[in-house]
Image (cartoon, rainbow, N blue to C red):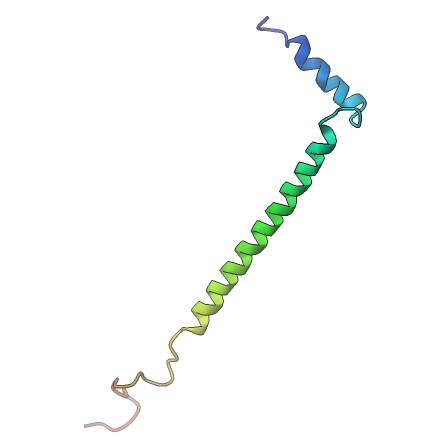
Length: 81
């Protein structure tokens, strides 16, 4: 019992390799697999769009280093005291 596989676990695999269209759950399983693949692609696309938007906003909102902020000293670009 422990060394040999049970007869019920060997026969379905043999039947699946012989005639996969005859098994009642195979078309349903294929549909589930296709839906899962489409869902995964949709998930990856949404994640990529969110990451791209975050990067775009991060680059867009970086402070411009050429002009000082209002009220900030002008820096070493001009008159010395």
